[in-house]
Amino acid sequence: METRGIEQMFDFQRLPNDRFILLLLLLYAPVGFCLMLLRIFIGVHVFLVSCALPDSIVRRFIVRIMCSVLGLHVQQNSPRLRDKTTRLYVCNHVTHFDHNIINLLTSCNTPLLEGPVGFLCWARGFMELGQGVGSRTELTETLHRYCSSPDTLPLLLFPEEDTTNGRTGLLKFSSWPFSVSDSIQPVALLVKRPFIAVSTPESSWLTELLWTFFVPFTVYHVRWLPPLSKEDGETHQEFASKVQGLLATELGVISTQITKADKAEHIKRKRHSAPQTAHSSKNGFNDLGARPRTVAQGFLGTSVGAEDSRIARLAQQVKEVLPDVPVSVITRDLLQTNCVDTTITNLLERTDQFNSEAAMTMPSGPGKAAASSTPSAMVSSPNLKPAAKSFGRSPIDRHMSLQERKEALYEYARRRYIEKHGLNKEDDL
Image (cartoon, rainbow, N blue to C red; front, side, top):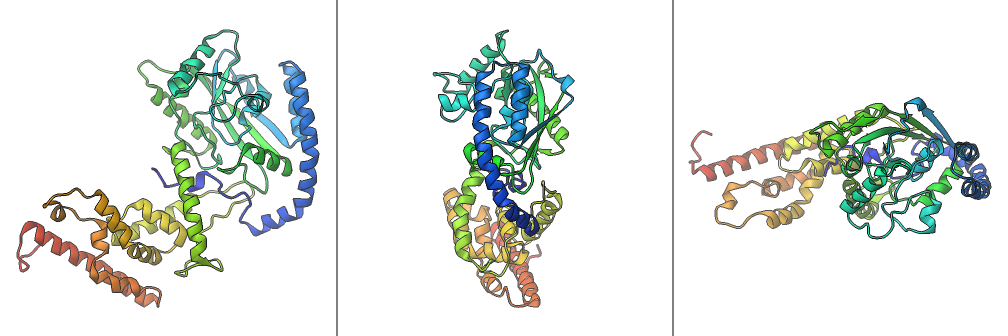
């Protein structure tokens, strides 16, 4: 799983870290609660009006004006680029209401891929696919038949299959939406709001709706890109990657290989490590004296490229001392400690874990022990234990223990080389 940058693609906490913005939010809170109650009442009327009026440009105009009262402001660039003959729109995914926003600009249908069907599906503006659509192949065939019908509305699909914060990068586009139709029109979506994040990974659509009513406004900026067609000999995945690159360039973000499954795995790991972090912390500091790193969120987002470069440099320093420890493990620890010495100490203290992982993955055989060099073997060298315990005294002690660790690792590698090649200790290497 690609871990670099995944933390910056999602807002895992709703409230900002900036104390000034947090103070403004606290002062605004009474007004926000009153505004939320009023908008809930108005939102019921918006729903009734949208159900009563037939689908037309008049209905979209009226509902769009009423949604602005709810705090949903929709802007669009280059509406003339929208091709009325295109049967498939593809868009990046930011919030639970992206399909409703596009529907305020043009009529289209979005199938519900996950979640309960019935009245709730219809009320949220999704299209039910009916029974019998169990696999991805059946879904693709059903949507392909839908697009082949001349009298149906265009489809709106989200190839990312999950939401991001929209500020850093795009999830890897799945190839199956691009097998529905050979001609698509990309739609770039930007979402901004003051005070709080536009979405969080584990929040439900109802919670997101209440937060939308709470904040003063949420701005949805829709950009229409020229239609694209799949070239001869081009695979669906290549077509998806090309469209992903175009949308990323338009939005000013990067194209990543992080998938929906990677996001789910990352959330699971954060949920598992959160109780351990809370248990090991005291008064905001961890047991080793290093303060956990926090990323300050600005009024409408901030750049994290410099922070990624700094963490990468720190990870490289740790990698020089512990060359066989995975970079993902080093980076994950650095994000918590923000300190090279503390991270090295943490990895050395986890010798038992590395030993157990190496024992499970190492093949059996009499010659395997001399042919492989695992991080657990290097880290568990007896010469390294005093060095690990000497951390945390003074800068001079920490430097000396780091140098001693390097010398111990070199000496261990030298002995392994001699044993492997059957050399005498007096031979020059």
